[in-house]
Amino acid sequence: MTVPSLADARALDAADPLRPFRARFELPDGLIYLDGNSLGALPKATPAALDRVVREEWGRGLIGSWNAADWIGAPQRIGAKIARLVGAEAHEVVVADSTSVNLFKLLAAALARDPARRVILSEPGNFPTDLYVAQGLERLGLGARLKLVERERMADALDGEVAVLMLTHVHYKSGARHDMAALSAEATAVGALSLWDLSHSTGGVPVELDGSGADLAVGCGYKYLNGGPGAPAFLYVAERWQDLLASPLTGWMGHAAPFAFDDGYRPAPGIDRFLCGTPPVLQMATLECGLDLMLESDPAALFAKGQALCDMFITAVDRFAAGHSLELVTPREALRRGSHVSWRHADGYAVMQALIAEGVVGDFRAPDILRFGFAPLYNSFEDAWRAANTLHAVLAEGRWRDPRFAARQRVT
Ligand SMILES: Cc1ncc(COP(=O)(O)O)c(C=O)c1O
Image 1 (spheres, protein in one colour):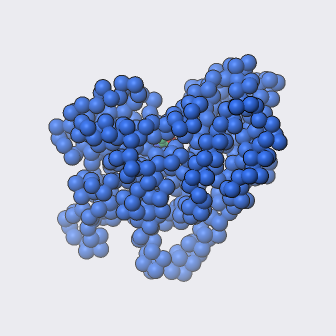
Image 2: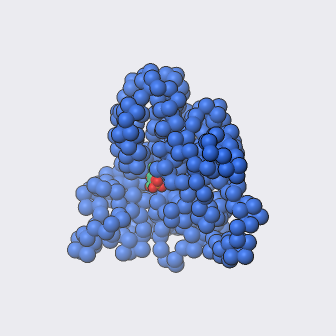
Image 3: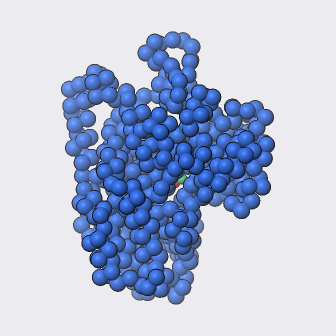
C-alpha cells in the first residue's frame, strides 16, 4: 500500500457509510480518541437515557420499576442484543457482573463438570485478570492447575487432563487474533471446553460463537460497546451446556424461583443460573444505550472499516517506524488481528504521554507497548492519518523527552 495522503484519508471518510455515527458521540473537538478499545466514547443519547432511568424509573417508579420498567429482565434483554454481535442465540448470553467474576464462574463450572480433568490451559501473556482468576481457583484446594503454553504448542498441550482451554480471542497487547473455530475444535476433540475472552473482540471484529463451536465466553461492556466506565460484562454459555454446568456463585438471581424465597438453592434452567445478585440498573441502562447505537450499524461495514483504519495507520507509521525504533507487534494481515494496533518503543510511556498532550489519545501497556484502538463507529480515516503524523512529529522532534512525560500515573 502506498503512503496515504490527507486527501486520501478525507476521500475515504467521504465514502464511509458509517460516517454519520461520529456525530452521535460526545467527542471533544480536535481530540483524536484512539482508546475505544479500553473505554468507549460517550454516546450523545446516554445522558438523557440515564437521566430518565434515574428521575422517572427510580425517582417516580421506585420499587415498581423492577417490573414496570423491566429492570429485572435487563440481563437477558441486553444479553440478547450482545448475542447479535457475537454470533449467538438470544438465550445464550446474559449481562452480569464483571468480566473477571464471569471468568471465575465459567472456569469453576468447567472444572466441576469432570473431576478427572483439573487443568486450565492458557497462554503466557494472557490478560492478567484471566490468569489471576485461574490462579485463585488453583488456591481453592480443588486440585485445579493452570498450565501456560505458547500459541504454537497449544494443540500438543491439549490432552485428557484439560478441563478448559481459556484464551483471549484478540490479544490485549499485540492485537493478534486466535482462530476460534480451529482451537475450539481442538479442545472439543480431547473432551475439553473452550472459554473465550471477547473483551477486545466484541464490536471490533466479527465473532461467530455458535458457528465456531465455542463452548463458553465472556467479555467487557465498556470497550467497543460504549457502555461507560465499569459497565457490566457479559457471559455466553452454548445452549448444549446450559443445563449441564453449574455456577459456583449460587446467588438468588440464578435460582429457579428467586421470589419463592426457598431455603434451598435450585439452579434456574438455561443461562439464568449464571446470574448471581441484583443487576446494576444504572450501568445496565448506559450499556444498553451504547449497544442500541452500535446495532443500528451494518456489522459488515463496521468490521471492514475497523480493518481499513488499522491498515491505513500501519501504512502511515511504517514509513518512519524503523528510523525511530518503532517495532510493529500487531499482525499485518487483517484477518489475524483485532481492531487495535500496537508498536513497541523503549520509551513507550513517555511517547504516549507526549502524544496525549498533542491531542492523540492511545494508551501504554508495560513494559514498552504503544496501543492505538480504532473504533469504527466514531474514528475516521483522518483520525488515523493525523495520529500517524503526530506520532512522527513527537518522535522526530524528541518532544517525548520532556521530563513531565516520564512521571507514571496510576492508570497508564
Ligand atoms: C482481555 C481482557 N479481559 C478482561 C478485562 C477486564 O476485566 P474486568 O472488567 O473484570 O476488569 C480486560 C480489561 O481491559 C481485558 O482486556
